[in-house]
Image (cartoon, rainbow, N blue to C red; front, side, top):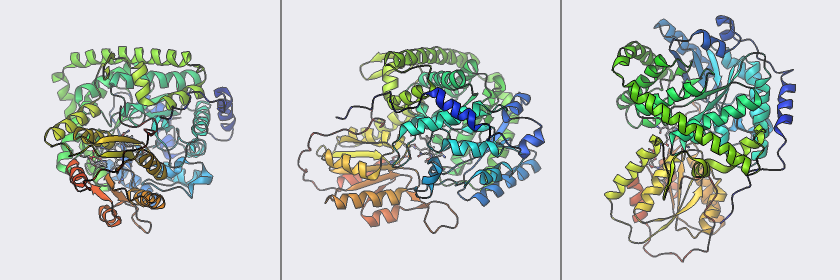
Length: 590
Ligand code: B12
């Protein structure tokens, strides 16, 4: 069993030197002009949010891969919505994960499903596409390319830059230099702090540990820890975003109330509860209404400056098109008119009481985490050292050591259980209850190609439930490493969970490595089985399940598919494994 990396690293440049680098960069890289700042006559989006307090703001997300199409879409959505009397206040775009690398490495990096912007001029095309605020959230802060991307975004006139949440959990393929990633992130935060205009450093909690903690109070505690680092030690305003994984209205509104109690920095947006999108467009409208109503009620009572984010109902099927984005915006606008009438029938006392528990638990978590890091030799006045230590500890160890819940035999009892874990636990238990166990305990190595690990969490529980023995292949693991872990542990099956539009290229790399190693291990693959074809004009990913089957993999859409694939494997057990490493820290198996 390999021991986890130490949480301090002598190679790391002290935070104060990195902040000085950021301040020096600010002499050349300042917030530039853009139509949003000009039309609203403000210095930053934070100013605009403060001035608009009390008005419901709307965020639209544009997910195209092509820059021309994105620029056109932003203008079109703003124009069409304005015609319909709906104001879209801000647009977010999805940078490609290859943009996370330093500039020199980007051309060779595997592309994902997002947009590639070549330099400051390309960023300016986005900020000049409309007079709404532009939000560059993903694959900027928190990744090794943070400094270049932040310079470009600021010069283009963006005044909210993210996404610190990604720092904690995201790993780029074949990039393991977390020291360089930390240095780039702290330098970029120093650059943001040194701006004359108030630039919001944005952190999407769900992209970080909040999507993996089992206790919502730990997620609130991370808000306090991140604020200590970014606002306290670096001096940049930190805007928090949450929402992907917050499904039930009570805990969603209570989290908002708790956030409003611990932060007065304007929020960027409340993210859509996209994990609830599981069916057709019609069914997803119910999910949209459910989370949006909660957000509108919460913002009515605690106007934090967050915009609502009505996610188009096709989001779980494909990258939403312009008409679908406009429909979602119009839906949100109309629902906001209904929402205030719901406020009197909402049980605010229940919300306040849960918010009390979240705040108390979050404070305990933050205090004990910071004290625990100090005890372990981390200089808690150094933002770089703190960030690195948190990233290396990872969500499971952090929660096990410092979680606010009472310790119990199988982990801590959550103060407020995280919805995502509760739902998946139930789903796995229900499915397992209806199955007969496997005839023998197959050894299955299960890993993910990218940050999405809920598929792995569910599949892992289901496999164990029917008697498989699980070998942890890790999260965001390179194909060669996954094969290495599987073979070293004597796995009889390799199971891959993938979501980032790279299913085919990843499977090819796994099969090539297996062939090199003379192995014919069966490969199961599930998740989002798509890929953007190299010769694509649209830039949209296409389903590759057929190609995967053609390669000899077993594509699985469901747990039933998984069971059928496992049952189709040869009866004879392969020889027992050599004692092996159970894989890197950060996997979904607690
Ligand atoms: C939750 C989520 C996130 C969370 C993940 C939290 C976490 N730590 O796990 C966060 C917020 C971090 C996230 C980030 C991103 N996400 Co995301 N995310 C989702 C979302 C909403 C749900 C996916 C999920 O976890 N489902 C839960 C699982 C349990 O359900 P399921 O997928 O139906 O699983 C079933 C089967 O697939 C099967 N299965 C799954 N794996 C396996 C494996 C095996 C072996 C077997 C047998 C079966 C199996 O098991 C289940 C059986 O019922 C989807 C949209 C959607 N609604 O599907 C987008 C989605 C997957 N994300 C997407 C994207 C683009 C991203 C980002 C790149 C966005 C960005 N710009 O930052 C980043 C990823 C960055 C990176 N470095 O990789 C896209 C992918 C696009 C594509 N491929 O076409 C999606 C589809 C959204 C969209 N429409 O644009 N995301």
